[in-house]
Structures are given as C-alpha cells and as structure tokens.
Figure 1 (tube, rainbow, N blue to C red):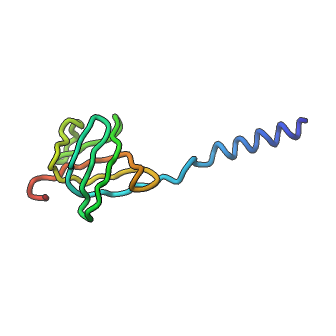
Figure 2: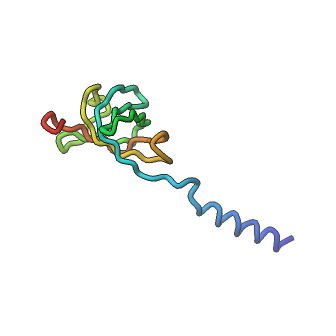
Figure 3: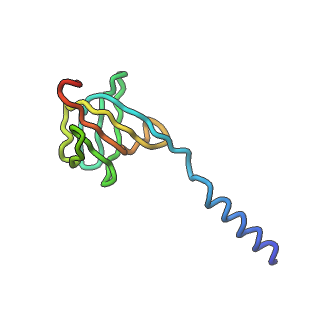
Length: 103
C-alpha cells in the first residue's frame, strides 16, 4: 500500500508540473472594429477579423505611455500581442494604439 501511495504522490507531482496546454503569443495588427468591456475585435491587415478577450491585466499603450482600456476606440489602428491556443482563442496581453501617421 505504501508503494502505491508513493507512486501516486510522484505521479501527481509530475502531472502538476506539466503545462495544461501549449499557449503561445500571437501578434495581430489592424483596425479596431468593435469594443466591449470584455473583448476587442480587430480587422487584421491580412483581412481576417480577430476577437480578443481583454481583462484587467491587459496593458494598453499609446504614445509610449500606459493608458486605460477606455482609450480604445473603434477605428484606431493597433498592434496587439494575444496569448492563447490559436487565433480563435486569444486574450490580449499588450495593445499598442498607433499614432495617426502610423495608420
């Protein structure tokens, strides 16, 4: 019985140390087409529409300064780094609002 419990403890420790899923960072560049309290939608330069979740840990930058999520507006050009399993499952880590001349 002790060997079984010891094996169970070792197996549990190994499985706990393994990542649950292989999340990766995905860059998205384009124009904001929709904004809600929990998501942003971007028409990417490649033509696809990408929806990203946003949360309190999402960092928003404009002109080299950190700004609030309230600064994100439809029509703005942005560069975003999303984190997730693929382009259909992303949470925005960093959103950079581009200056007018960069649009």
